[in-house]
Length: 452
Ligand code: UD1
Ligand code: MG
Image (cartoon, rainbow, N blue to C red; front, side, top):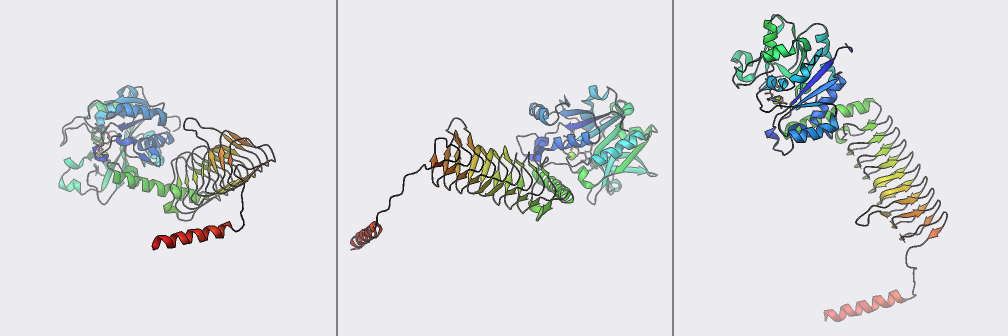
């Protein structure tokens, strides 16, 4: 089957008015990735070598976004929204190039499982002309019903065109179809619009093919495969299903999630085996965590790399460019951005490390801040191997602290510190015997005088 060529036509011209959004519906994200990009990924996973994206509403924004998630896809504009068959025909030029298999998918149905697509393609390989991916539901309202006769699929009837008897059918059209490339144009061109909505229905090709004696097959997939997103409540529902799948996958791959329902992954999060993730952790896009690490509760991590056996959080924020090498520690209320924390270095409490390198084994005291920004440009702080930065120090970049450098607490460091040097960047302490007592007495009598 791998030899068979395949085009996926993804319909995404709809307006999505119920999203009440300036953003085209299919660009709303699930797990940090536009929902239509999930559809693209599924198509690719099922072996679709070419992609045709049918766009309409928000076409320019769609083209721009597609550059990122499907740079090789060819975009086709459906000028008027006259139905799903009409939308597929917008990609006529691509379809008529001649493919073995055509997969029609909806951009707003993001949870499609590539296995369901592969199963449908297999039916085409076995000689079917049209394969419909159906699902069963106790509440079929709104879906096209699969009409079978003698165990064969003979038609799909849209809700509005159904008889009362047909409305009782619970086997529904999930919206995904696989069509033999050799039959596709002929069938699509034969679709008319004599129905309750006056639209050209893709679903009509089932009856057309069946009447011609072609082999039409319904396969069955789970409900999620057909979950179409029309509003933000459904978007959240899809996010929930996606997250549940991903958490399950993570746990089966050897990651401990203490409270899985509170951990949020992105589409590309990678976590190694034997890493433990405590409750309420958020992974934004671009995160890679190696094995044997511990991510403590309430950490927020995006665009970051965490090597094996690191310790992060609780309440840590790793921002893009954070790169923690083996056994590094970033503790509570620390923020790390665009910085390498070398092996075994410790940034344990209340600290900001931005545009910096913290050398291996260095210890950064509580409340240390790299002052990386002068209001115009960002500057770099380089902290050498084994350095010790005392608590509550400000390191004003650009600045270098040499290997084994030692910074006194409360310093403001504006000049580079050589290897093994001790730097004080604060006023020397002055102690006056008895002066504390004297002050207290003076203030107390002033307060008494005021009350009189
Ligand atoms: C469609 C199916 C229905 C199925 C249901 C599953 C048809 C006629 N009906 O109905 O059998 O049960 O999906 O969710 O196919 N689109 C365009 N241009 C158009 C029309 C639609 O690009 O002119 C796109 C939409 O943006 C959407 C997809 O096609 O992504 C499906 O259209 P929609 O209007 O949601 O079809 P349903 O009524 O849900
Ligand atoms: Mg729909």
